Length: 103
Image (cartoon, rainbow, N blue to C red; front, side, top):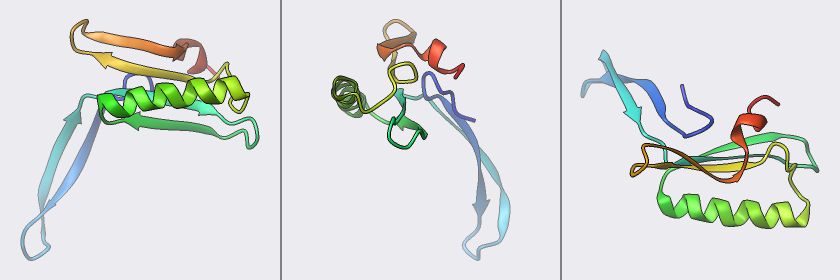
């Protein structure tokens, strides 16, 4: 499960011993750094990138602003968010994820 707003995720990883025999599972939970989501106008595919660092998040913001200026992505579906530890909430850097998540 991954949140399309903040990038938080949970998953089950299978565990194997040295001989490759299944020996259980481990739950992995991670806080996301943010999400880049957009629909390309040329191909109409909806794309989600789950951002893994503050630097990647800032690069995603810059990239999306450029693509919006060029008219390459659908402005109604495009957004970049980041998680703020200081505020303990999601910050929207570009777009509106609450509108976009309904499309």
